Length: 508
Image 1 (spheres, rainbow, N blue to C red):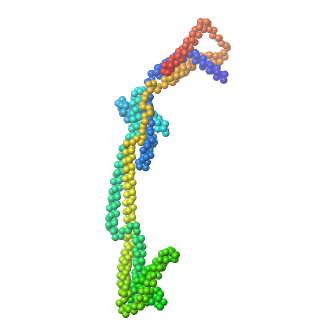
Image 2 (cartoon, one colour):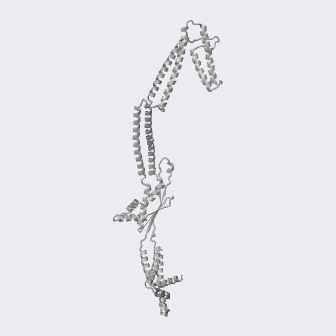
Image 3 (cartoon, rainbow, N blue to C red):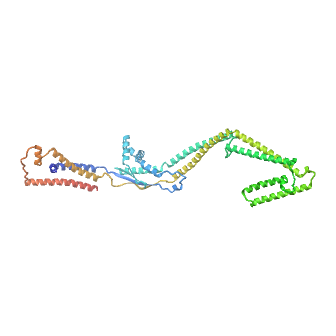
């Protein structure tokens, strides 16, 4: 540690020996540096603040009817692409900077310089943007900020109607295409139906449902035919005498009396009574009324049978009862003929459907496919019509109202005082640098022209023993000169410091 201190003292003594060279170098460097800093051109900053309002009362009112763009995303994209090459080139043309560019190289340099100097600041969620630009010409800086502000607003308001028109034009083209598909589908359906008019499926029924229905109708009609034939045969037996017509037992009960008209009515009432008993009890009013009516008809049979028996008409074959039987037989024959015709019709219908067991399902499948394709095209067509109306409303909404409004909080302004360069900082750097440079120069000179300031250093370098040293004896005259030189040195440093302070006060 002692050796390090000694060596440091040796260095300091060497620097002190060449202190005037240090002062001269410091003055020279400081003056030159301060002159350069002082002559640096002033840099002015133009700035503007703008607020983007994305809240609009129509957006919630027309929700679901229109397609609203994501305004936050649009603003984010605008802020990111504002300082892009196309926009910067537009700014250059707007402020006539392109006139100064002599060739492509100057143009590229100008574009790069603007892209580096233009600053866009944002606060994020508040949608508050700050545009700033620094230039030596305050008017040019203000014009450039104004141009950027114009581009920013145009980027938010422009191309809305153009985008809406493009969307509507595209949708109209799609609608026209689907109209052609619908017309073609309708023509195909019409031609298919005309071609297969005899085997087209009925509304709501497929082939197998029709075949099952035809079989059920045929079986039901055959059953009705057998019932009509049995009724006709019964009437025939009554007429030929195989069955008694109007006979009454000795006990006079109605079950042994045959009366075709009344028997048919009683039989119908009995069937109705059986159906009622399935749902109601014997005390139900409808069941009681049906029993009473059956009893009245049976009493009437007994009375008519008594009248016929007591009359003993010898013209039996010409009795009214026989005439009634003949009329009933004619009706029964007509019913049987009608049932036969119906059975033949249902049989032919069933056989015809059965013979189409291969063709009808194929026709149904093709028809289902045609209908499916037609319905898909129709659904898309209707959706496109709705989307076109929505696009028209959205376009009108975007062109007549401001979904995004721009509010200029601070218009482009330029401060009277330049924002750069920071001369105070540069003056301080030059001042400290000059002092360090002067000390460094003195140290270098002391190393180039070394002197021995102690016996130890002389002994170490020469390698020889030192017998002794003779001290310097200063006369009064020399002391005065030495003191004056010291004052002059201090005055020179104080002058340099005073000049630095004066410069700092001037720019303050």
